[in-house]
Amino acid sequence: MARTKDSASAPKEPGRLKQMWQVFQMTRRYDSTAPWLMLLGFLAPVAVALAFALWLSAGNALTITLWVVAGVLAGLLIAMVILGRRAERAAYSQIDGQPGAVGAVLRGGLRGGWMGNEMPVAVNGKTQDAVYRAVGRGGVVLISEGPASRTRRMLEDEQRKVARVLPNVPITLMSVGHDEGDVPLHRLAATLRKTKRVITKPEVVAVSNRLNSLQSSLPIPKGIDPMKARPQRGRMR
Image 1: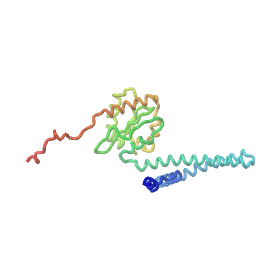
Image 2: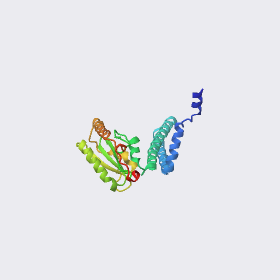
Image 3: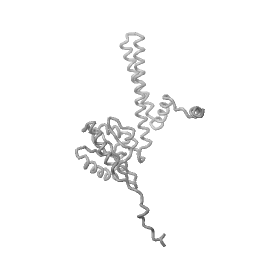
Image 4: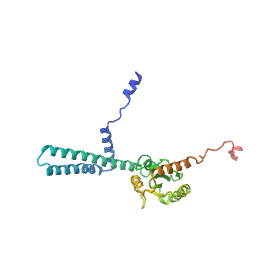
């Protein structure tokens, strides 16, 4: 009986239509052009289908209906694709500039055989600048998070480390930000996919495993050993 009551009192997850409506509302708040693009994406196939229907149907009502239905379905599909793209961009705009934003993209936004980790490979504890790593058909890509003037040395240090381990694998340096030459956060995943393919899929897995094994084998700094800590003179007095 307790389980039945708990399950009955537990809040139900919103349905698919309600989830889509919530995504649309969130996207509209951060992107005012999204509704108009979705409307255009819906009406364009409907108009094209209606034009073909009037041209090819020769007055046949069934043919016209089929063309219109096909146009409506195509319009709905295009509108949903536009909503997904704009919603992803709106979501990234909310975390843009925050520490860990690049890691969030690498965790959930990579496609096309690319692999990345949400944890950075190098961090500046004072400025929160970080360097992340992604591996794909384009080789190894090192991505900095923070002003390029501060992260350039961090990128070059990581580049030397990777080059010593994998001398034959291409290494690309990227900086995420809003300065000239930087990659916008919402374009990071697409920019990775556009890199020239130079290694095979099995090599991607081998390179990723090699780098991850080296990183996991690094010594983890431990806390202060109380047996070796020196007492302060003021307290000794």
